[in-house]
Image (spheres, rainbow, N blue to C red):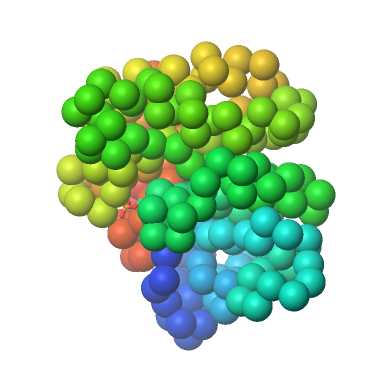
Length: 237
Ligand code: PGA
């Protein structure tokens, strides 16, 4: 089953989330065959973005590395599960870059997800500098290290998101995307239930082409997921 996940980042109030949910419901009707849809709104809009009839599920955009306690501003995996989430995004490049999240803290976040029955959507991807230096493969290996302690029998989603393609309007080519996804699949070859997404400037215009990339099971979509019509169009690709 292909997976299409909408990462809203820090966008949408509850009212806007409700309007999106209504519009998405109208767009997809009874659902899109062969496609699983996930919406990752800000925490405050989780309830408003949900679908009572279950045609899409919810994800947290982030999750605390600790299970609970005196951690002002954090939201735990148990709270996300309680708020209806099935997934949590872990290690998005914006979290790595702007909030200094590194391997050890991301490994803890993955572990917290598991304790609460959430499936991590674990993000990896090289920067422009790493790519220009020929370090894409090395970077993926290093970032996937954080999954070493995670049981291989559990379902896992990995999103390949080259940093240079995020929010730039310059997506990877299907060939680059396929190469990276195949490499990720090789590194994680012991996994029984692994879906690999691509993320970075996915639009309704390039979705069909990118879905032809080898070993690519869907997308993590930022900007183009803010409109229900374009998120639905990408998911139908
Ligand atoms: P984008 O973002 O689709 O706006 O490039 C993707 C992401 O950051 O997950």
